[in-house]
Structure formats: C-alpha cells, structure tokens
Image (cartoon, rainbow over all chains, first blue to last red; front, side):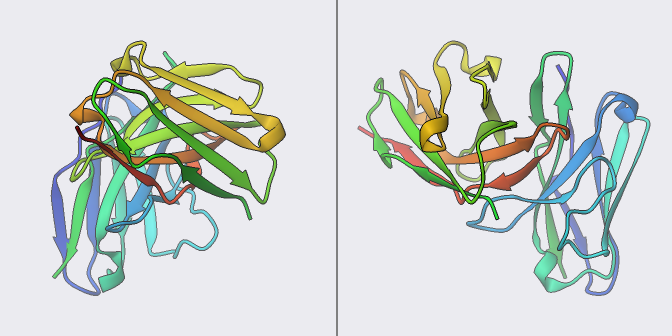
Length: 108
Length: 118
C-alpha cells in the first residue's frame, strides 16, 4: 500500500518561503493533494492535482512533484498560514485514500 | 454552496457501536463519493471509507470488518457505523465529499468529537 512521509515541522519568518515535502513511491502515477488544517477546524483543500488551486486559495500557495517527492510551497508567508499541512493521494491499486502524517508550519 | 454536517452521540461505551450521520445541504448527493475521515486527538487524518451515491462502498482495511457506510439519497444523508469500539476509536470524525473525477476531498464537514468512555 502507498505510504506518505512528511517532516513533523517547518518554520519560516514572515515574508519568507515555507517548503513542505511529502515523500512517496513514484508520484508520476499519482495526483497529490494538499490540505491546510488550523486548530479546531476541518481541513481545507489548498492544492489539488499536483498544482491546481481551488478558488479562494491565494496564489502564494503552489506545489510541484518530481519522482518520489511532492512539495508544497508557501511564498510570502503570513501569520495566518500557521497550521498543519497534509499531503494526500489516491492509491488506485486498491481504491484507498492515504494521508501523510502532517507537517506543522510555524511562522516565526 | 454544498455544506456537510455531522451528527450523532458524542459518547460511546467500549464494545458498543458508534453511529454517525452526515447531512448534505445545498446540493445533490448524486455522482459523488461520500467519505468518513477521522482524527484522533493530536494525531493525523485517517480515511475510513466511502459510499458512492449508487451505494457501492470501499473501506480502510485497518478497520477490518467493523465499519459500514451507507447512503440514503432520499434524505441527502450518509452514515457511518463502527462496531466494537475501543478507546483508540476516540477521535474527531469528519465527513467529506470526493468529486467523481478528482481524487481529493473538496468539501468537509466541521467534524464531530466522539469519545469512547466507560
């Protein structure tokens, strides 16, 4: 089954760039999605299909995939970006959905 | 826009059955996959399973045979049943929608906290 890995935490100063990695087994065949979750709230989809943004998500959020690594990039980080971020894929081999363990982003 | 709302008991005793309902408002239940996802306190997200609007289902094998998800299109609702609960089933339970074409969860409920407590 598909397994995703993420660093437990990432920090960035306001105005700088936060980069969150997501490791997996060959993302060439899998679309990667990213969610933002603030304390006490439901997750919110911020990136889907590797690098598409739902309406209402700022352009500061972007992503890329290459080989075994997917990356979420938050440019010009703001205090409001402090949250947990999860990557997710659909394992089509068994029609299951897999989340990464999550990365806590701290704005310094 | 489409909104999801979870409902059900917040306390369940060990070995008993957890039962939750998700009500879909502002849109049809048709042509989507309806999912349950949970999050234990301080931990990450775990996909439990889905029901397609037609009634077909798929479940996380980690739950073995304890989970059942069903849909009631006439009420625009879908439900989760988890049997033989233990303390490890204590979590915030979210219902979420998956589009037919994309494999992400684009609409989520606010979540409901379930505590297994004797």
